Length: 98
Length: 125
Length: 152
Image (cartoon, rainbow over the protein chains, first blue to last red):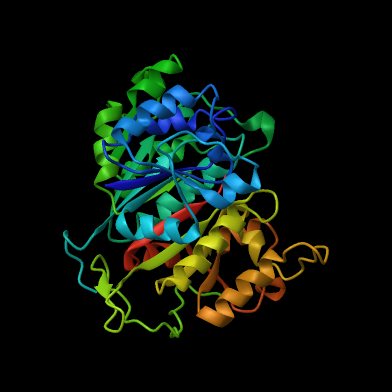
């Protein structure tokens, strides 16, 4: 399995939707940098995230959430710090979508 | 160093940007050409605006930037044989395989997903 | 000095380095160690990529993994100029890379073609960095368990 990272706001870039066409079931997805806006509660992308979560584990980088004042995130999204990011990289191969 | 088929690392280059607007495609191509000289199992896929890099009839004379579509067309001469284009990306842009400088194989997203899954290293450009 | 490949200097890592595609366990802690390479494709300050790459490298080293090298490509080569002089209350991104090299032996390698294009040469580069050919990146991709990309 492969870890996919997304670093763009879904409001600015279509990369999340593009990435999802290529992920395999069970592949973890980690949102970093501006990508973390995808996991905030009550956004246009909340339904999409809810459906991704059914087939893929979803993570968000906590320091990036905190830096952007995102305190309310969708249920079932796990937050990780940089060490958690490293753990994911240790476990899975990586595909960094830029 | 022993160079056996099994020891070859599988490296995938994902072309994602339209050409000329940013340098990513051009410097990505330079990276691919350089890596082609090494014992790697190299694959290149064109996704999203990356498919525009292959469009025929590019003429960069007027913008003062060197064109390189022809070099993509010549990748096979550098033993880069595995060239794939995402069908959805192509169709979204109203393009057909005939519009491209190379006869890249058109694949479904699902097939490209499987291809990605089997790689050791993936680099987006 | 330009080089196609620079051998990695010995690391003060407590664990045996993992071999290619065969993660090994550190005999002391029984933890798996991973050899990591980083490809950085964005310049400093404009984008968070340099910061994320640094924070990731730092955390990986803290966890006992080996970060073999940071390879700078595209505008990423600007990360290695020692002419950087940010205000005192801002981080000095170049100095941070230099320190990572000094303290943990992480090679900071800038692609020669990308550097020449952008006016980056060894006389203005940070201590501990070097200009290399793309062969060094290929070699890094081959010997590491993971190659991560940070950029825009």
